[in-house]
Image (cartoon, rainbow, N blue to C red; front, side, top):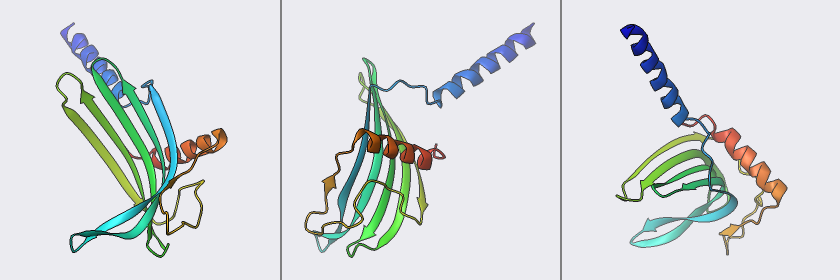
Length: 156
């Protein structure tokens, strides 16, 4: 009988642990974005333009009385100041902040690939105004979401 109880406890523990990694969280807010942002590097105490990155991202937020949970999935294509492609970073970040203590825990997973993967952003970037956020249609937003999830699903 003790052996059966021990096995049931182990099975219950495994089920509970697997549920925490599941995508079953019902998020309060989901934001899908496509934007371009400039990259700056410090040179002799000054920040100078060194290139830009094109980003497709999804931000998920769950906010309740006890905590705020966030998850960010992103595809970031990096370009030098001449517009030459460098690399792509795929990332997913989980964060949890307890409201009563303001303690925060987070985890980030990244991977790099050598092909541009962002979608619905202009191929050419205006050097004079390298930052812009694209207003996505409903269809484009769904396509960006599908692309980001597909490319980052292997990250834990």
